[in-house]
Length: 99
Image (tube, rainbow, N blue to C red; front, side, top):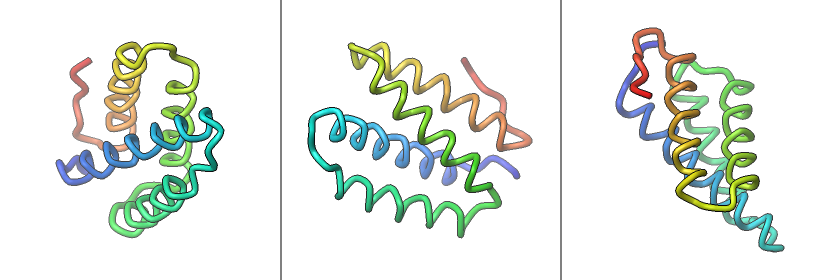
């Protein structure tokens, strides 16, 4: 698929929700609100862009794993930014990562 700023923003929003969900789950909360929002965001992306569900779900799980395994947000945010760039490069034919 071709890169678009809108798709990039949608993926960033999904990443932010995935991070909040990982925080909720590690804080002994259920994260129901975050989970419901994530499902809605995923549904929107899958119905709007030609991207596979498996690819987006794998990306979400990777972002959650990064957040859960990093003690400092600054370290986690840099890693998430790198994974974000790699995801876009993998999905979008004309995207050139800047990492």
